[in-house]
Length: 492
Image (cartoon, rainbow, N blue to C red; front, side, top):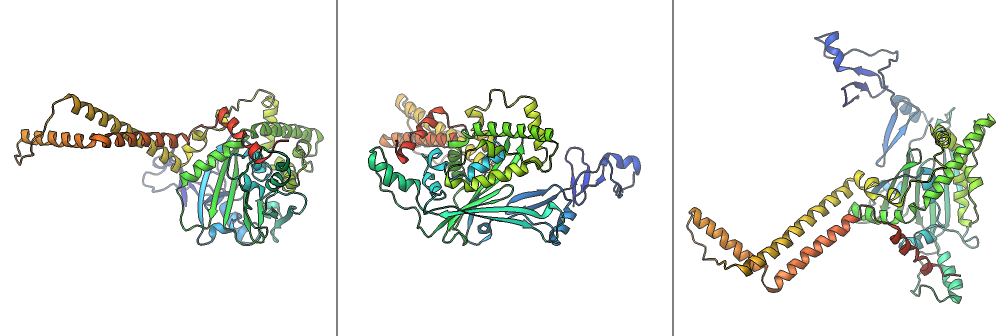
């Protein structure tokens, strides 16, 4: 296949990136030529770089170090592995709903946040998912967290291209903090939620979280931790620049029908807004520490064996649930310096004293749903457009009702029986009579107030839904959310 640039029309071979046609040079070389015979083995300046690309479960994966032919041959020979798949997506009867959002936060910070079950009980206290996080946490007693690691290496690979690392945590899917709060803390504190608290899951089930390096996470609950899960949450976190990430997630469920995507997007955005701004402080501190580590790395002169102990020296691991997070931190500390252009970018930002200046990451910038999600999501963008159309229609309809009511009250309009005369004047009179009849019907008695109320409600509902796709979580909303913590965890 050939790829043509839409800017100047140059064409390139998809297999190796060689430039096969420059339209502007065809006439000058050979007016009768139907193509520019430019193929040679020698690489020219106009040739592009071909990289291997594959699509797996709706995601585009790039192998930047191999051409398409090289990647295909290496896969067939068992030298490299194809991208990891979430098993449930391929099973019949499962529905998958995708979501996407961009964040001005480093991808490593986002991934650590996703795999941290301890924060959900508090940072998401106003969400119904708060208790769900408790099922993935450990208590250090009966419900300890087990860790299983796998290092995948293609048997025929002599290089690093075939290596991969997967780590899975598993813990009993039962209440921990919730149970302790109810049975211990609430016994001597009246400030608690008096609702009857039920077990969210049977003890036999296991909550599992799997991280497939470098950017895939999937989690769910099953009977023994290895069987098929009825509901799975998947995350693909992709770095798109220094300290910027694209967050892609999927809700995978065994359901007979699929709900509209925009409903999931509204719920997910409300959920993500609850703790994303809190990550800004962690984001800045970790990146600064990482940059300083790279500076030490250069001064030591041993870049290949050096481990940049950013998280080991910055984080304080104490919770029994942090066994997974601690290993993820060790992985990032040992591998991030090899990420393309990362070290150079971090050092440049440190040199320019970006980390020492006051942060420009305001709440509105960090949580701007329209720029981060709505503009790049066709479903949400279409929902906003539909809401705006409904608002315009309901406003016009309501004003028309009021005007018709006023006109019928203040004028002596009357109508005659519609005749069969087809003259122009008769047609005008008939149209006028129909309009008056329609106006009297719509504005008669309680019907007028009902229709006016419905148009107002329709406008209000559409406007409220539209606001869900723009910046919403201001300081006041955040403070109101924080109050829910004392309802789930009793004060001392």
